[in-house]
Length: 121
Length: 381
Image (cartoon, rainbow over all chains, first blue to last red; front, side, top):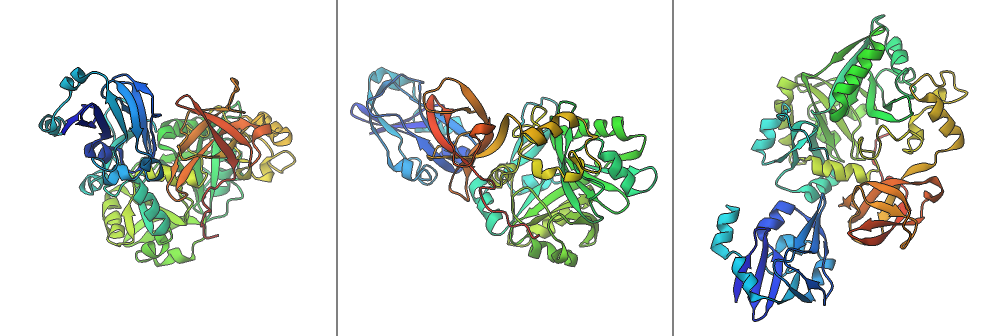
């Protein structure tokens, strides 16, 4: 299992041909208290860099972009009931959606943990 | 919020204190202001409603209006040329909400006017303060001296524990009622204190000489009931309280009637009153008092959980292509634990309970027109 990161502060956990995607702890700390999350529909095909989800704090709405191309195979319905999970467990229970990876070649452009740590330092 | 200024940001006398207390700073109306502290907007909001919150609002404009005759009534009569409110009727030691109108009946700014016995004390919005001062000088200089009180800070102490917190420094505040205002000794400093605010909670605004501001705020924050609160929570608190944000919910294109601010225009200034009219745009505004206006500001409660934010277009139903209105403020109300908004709708569709639809990210979300304030206010009347 590999965890990769984007410069837009999303994380991807790669298991076989499925990527689980969420936002990083750094991202949630910048957003503040999350009060609403809108997730893509299962079955939707997302292109890399397409707006896929929305996360809203008290003050503002932010887009979450698809870090890679793929089809949405599962979404985390727990976030609708408890958006604050994004603040308490961004890297774990607060995953957003799972994508069936269309092109594993796209993973090559993403950061590993050390590179992401340097990016947010 | 306004964040388009490119000139160097100004600082309030409390800037160093904000930084020392871990504030996240943002540009607002030309000032570097705290949008939140470490607690975050949600906790700051809830703390203000449950305990007490302290806000730096020193960016706002403070002005003294002094009649050349020396009589405060002459300053009041002069100011009535620029606002549709009864200023003559503001008793010494009292304060009133007012608006500067333009010739089209629109609003140049909203403000607070207090009668300090020998002169009037005005608090105006930060983004408008230069224009407001120029407006006063251009129109009232014959009768009045206009003094900019730029050497004073302004802080707001809001919430159910505001009175007990301020009483430690000013024994007199317990006897003040909502909208009482005047000079008070706070600790060993000569301040102007009003029992008012912008949160819907009981509380006070305290004008303090700039060089005494940090010591006063530090003394208030020594009380564990009091937390510093940023502009983020100030906005969510005022939105839940149904209070207008100038430049968003009201502006030069909205009249007091369209803005649902009829309550703020006393009968003496309306048609048939002893001092009816006589302010810019009176003809248009007084006609609207008689006949109504085509559109009206309303409270809006989204049916779902998604916040509907400023700028969202409003429609009569889920499918129509004709936009009927617009959201002017919207977000999440932490005390309601639900999204809240306000905006303008055709008056025919402005009744409480009417369902309309907002377009958000390509979807039509239902909202209901709702009474304001969304959260009951707790003023000490």
